[in-house]
Length: 239
Length: 223
Image (tube, rainbow over all chains, first blue to last red; front, top):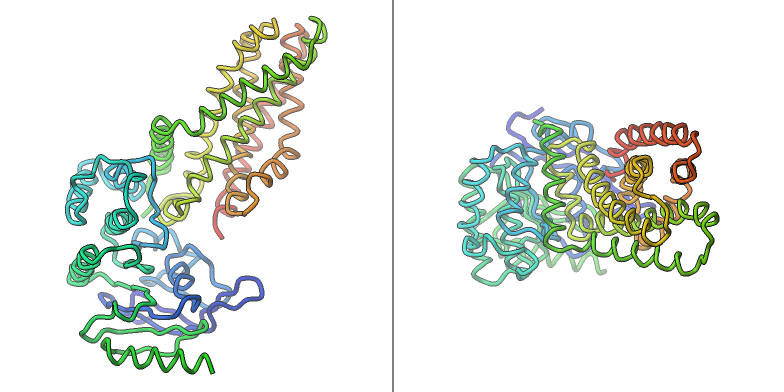
């Protein structure tokens, strides 16, 4: 096993019934790496993130996170993962701070640690003034920001973000970019899925491009080069 | 790393209680249904005293089971609709602890409805449903029913026809509770001494179901 790799995926396939969604994926991701997962709607991005988080089981192939094998050793992996999913994964009838406190308890955090970390995160995502408001009164963007705070609460080594920019206004998108930069500087491994190439950074990052459940590109690219690859892939798929 | 079992279960119970105190989504619907149900039965069955003694235990349990079904559906839907079940499954906690947390919340809400229902039935049916034997039978029966109910509601909540599917899946499995609970309640109300045997049988079935649900929940809740 490669010591620097936090994620190792071998011949990973996933099918729902007879419908193959992911087919024979092979890749590894190093600790502290920032990876963007691109692909059109239905290309298998969300399924791949669910598999990496241990929420879904592969049909075939192997996944190792930090040397632990999924789904067999999922319990050891869970504390290392923070997930921002399509849905906010928040309780509507609890306040923002109660939500963070509840999830802090599930992650075994002590009371003072929960309180302090919750306060810091709410401030960081711009929700400290709404800490006592019920989540059901929040807009989509506010829920998304709280969801990001929930994912960062237990300081995970691996951050999985599934279309995190959806529903965010420009200011919130900028805030998310800042948070991701902070997480990257803290040597967290980040996998961010999006179908919007406009979210690709100007600077070069590692990108995985999924098309029809297969990785058609795995390499370093900036916004311009990735756009070309994405367009070529979409053209090849349509012909 | 695994969060301690009890800490996780208590956190889920406290969360469900807090959310329910705010929204009153479960208790109000369950209590209203139970109230209307016993009223309808009391008007529909214009019974003499002897016939009432025969029917009252059936009315109590049918009402409790259907009220509980409403609560189970809503309780698990609250976890599923916003994807919160995934958030629970992502945490480093035992699946059995999640089961105990959800089960305890469901049993508590159904228990409250049951304890409200008993004095009401004393008034409407003229039977002493506040007898200790009836109260104990009600609470034990609720524990058993809610254990299997929580397990099956977790299975059906991700399906499109969950409201219809849960009773179809649950009622046949709950027959052992219904039969023994009705017999024990009827025994207490009619003064038959064998009610204690039925209560012991009910307690035995409850323990078996509870252990089975604890063991099976991990398989049911994951994909």
